[in-house]
Image 1 (tube, rainbow, N blue to C red):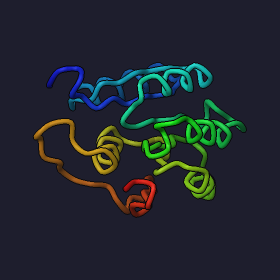
Image 2: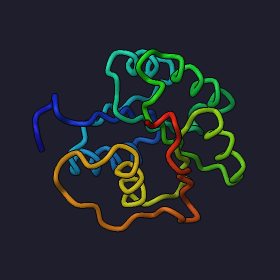
Image 3: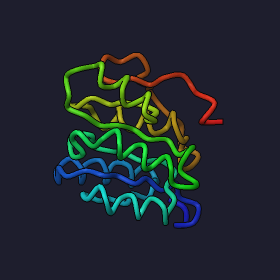
Image 4: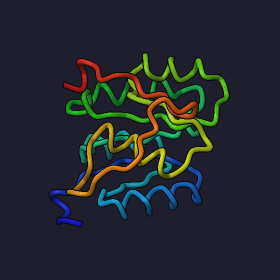
Length: 153
């Protein structure tokens, strides 16, 4: 798995315990280091101290403050280029466009499979080690991944 210094760290802000444990277990198994939090305010402080390679945000946890949370993350030095994946159960696909306009790199709709999530993580930050990536889910009706932007360069 590699040592802690060479691992890519994912900050995961989620309040659903079963989902967070399943996601963290899968990402850890794939070689990523996962920092889980269920408090949005604390996650801002932790993100500024880590900094993570990627941020997973449960937008349902954040409610109406989700876009402000993304704006605050983007204002933290060193996080402007860190990919953010919005996780939501909102059935309004227009919200995904709102999240990506605000600063998310991808929106993943619940319910999603662990393989869908891992595939998107791999696309955004690469593999943590030499393992090859199997199937990708670009174009899935449950995942919106925009083409790379200038921010990711």
